[in-house]
Image 1 (spheres, helix red, strand yellow):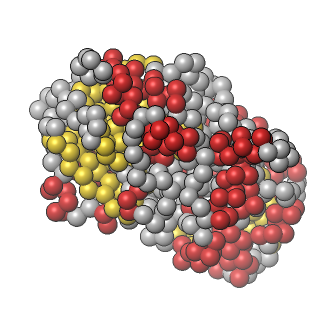
Image 2 (cartoon, rainbow, N blue to C red):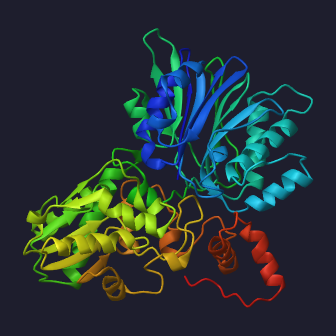
Length: 512
């Protein structure tokens, strides 16, 4: 999960890129970077930290040019501690290319080996984004061999990337002296939206971003989403080209975007994030009515901020009061993406403060968007009890998270997921609640799909264990978990799982 922005204009774009990143800050708080193009010259500044901390006035002054890309990073592969893995990445051959990536590849090591042995290209970090950059650069050199690099050659290069890369990726890239390129993987797992604006001088500028909210807030008009497998290219004159570059693309967006990742004021693939969260709350309340009638709840309280639309609907359907019981410190990052359990646990009470008046002597239903590791949920339940709550029930607007997400969200091992191997009663005991209620996966999919019935399937792998790209099996997951336990650099689990099969290690098929 990262945020990406790309802009082509007749005017300087540094401020627009910065503003776009601040709107997408929720998608990545580990590092940020901007690259602008002034003619054939790239200007780059990137570092670890929040957008507001990475960029100073002196940095912004140096980011000259009328075209640029920007990235805010949340680490999913590689070393989270290294500023060298901040994006965008740059390579100087064949044309000078910079790239920012949102997503995660599942065949990184395989591609690294092919780049070194066959393509004669060197990768300097563990980041799958740098791997993608070098794959794209190699495919550009192959497509442009003997001819001028034009949109046809660029789209042929993207087709080559699609053939080689496996996983989820939404990409923005600039090619020195040519233009800005954006494309999305053949399943459309991670989001990418196109916007357009007519400036005061009458010129046209284009923008691509991870979410529509970035386009809206910068004064652009949303045109459409980039289709799965599609590439769009804006040359230095501002001309717009588009082509489908994948064989048999199929839109399967990540359903967790609507549950948690995206801002509620975004529209992704024609689906309002806010509306889906409200629908999730209605379905969740109806389930509570079915499985626990007469529960005697006095008040519904959301865990800020993502769960508010769902909690409002839960209260309305159940016919009980909705109250705000927690005040959020907005200067603490998202806890489930922090690197260690101790750091997550310590940050919860820094992040949220409970108001005792809303809990004392009441039977409380807490509503959250999801329960991942359970660390935050356990602390919050205890906070409610410390404030004098008589009973504490906990409801999740999402189904149980039982499987790792390998497409760009840091849920890498099953043993870290509280719902893995536990039922609702056991989870309630684990987090100290009187009862836990989960959304049903069928209701979640129906709620999201009702906003755009044209979408036939979603990536819901963290809930159902079905990995839509293929190539992810029990052996793959075992290798990922062993590597994480050792603290190793990311491994190519596809390659390792093949080796495991050859050695007959007896690894079973993942339970579905």
